[in-house]
Length: 158
Image (cartoon, rainbow, N blue to C red; front, side):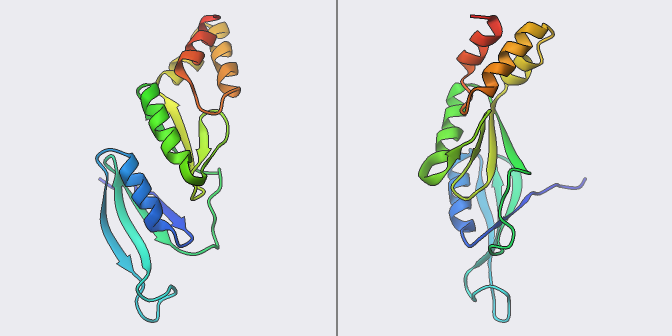
């Protein structure tokens, strides 16, 4: 069975990104780091690529240079069981230069877009009652960091 492994292109700061991500997510580790050798496009001895795992999901980070910056066209989505998890990832990824966007989206200090989403959100905005669904959706649209209690209250009409 094939394995799909996202590869993230960084501009010289892959080591710092991988360090943050593997500290923030449980069951995570760095697997292998390769460096540029002589006659390669990077500075000899500096990190070229890192294979790592975030909570069981394999990733690759490459220090490829400034040619391809991150955009919101792709994001990493984290489904969270409760508000404590939402807050853990939200504040961990926005720390030290990351910034909040909207509707549970953020950009970390490396420019990677993330969606930090409570698992209950899908049930609230997908509620079969169109009024509940609409209220939950409108509440979500007005938030940056998603707050489960506020989403639930909105859905309930409270």
